[in-house]
Length: 281
Image (cartoon, rainbow, N blue to C red; front, side):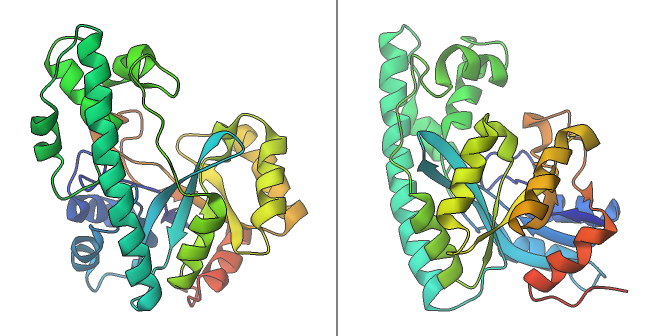
């Protein structure tokens, strides 16, 4: 089955509006879809309306940025439900948004000292209505001629620990999982390979599996079977649900040209049951 549980729109760092991402997913045969913009579910209404009465099942969700074990940890929050828990999550994300805006200003201050002045207020104005972040600064660096490409801007200046990077105080994984579960959602660890060491992934699940970190992204982006194998083995060992997504961004990640990943049939039933959904025929 083709599913998409990890993708982005203009509400975070994607290049296409949320409705267009959803429509593109349906056209490529996606049967289960969730837009997971960074730290916001602002594209929910548009994706829900775009999918409409098609056979594709649509979930409300986001990709939550956390910090633990000295690393940035991204959690896929899938199936948010209206209620007090979602209100509390939105309130916490509003704080995150304010912190990100302050961080963007401080990054611009560092770049100015490095001889690359940018108009931070203009950058923030362009990100109005979504979560501002380093990709916005990267685009500005390219537009100003300081860098050739967005990846170049990250590699030279904006990567974690880079000369212009400013550390962001992130949610702990424990707080993130608790907020997501209180809002009725399920939680999966995004792109586990980015943590570098399998033992760190083991440790994350040891700490948070019982609290609700029950899924792992076993199918990611353009990864082939060999790259996904170790995470599928870990899923069996720890009794985790396997999720999959393309991490579609549009032009920011041109290698991924369309949303959707194939998920092996053996994982489809457990995934739908975990999400509280009836498996389609």
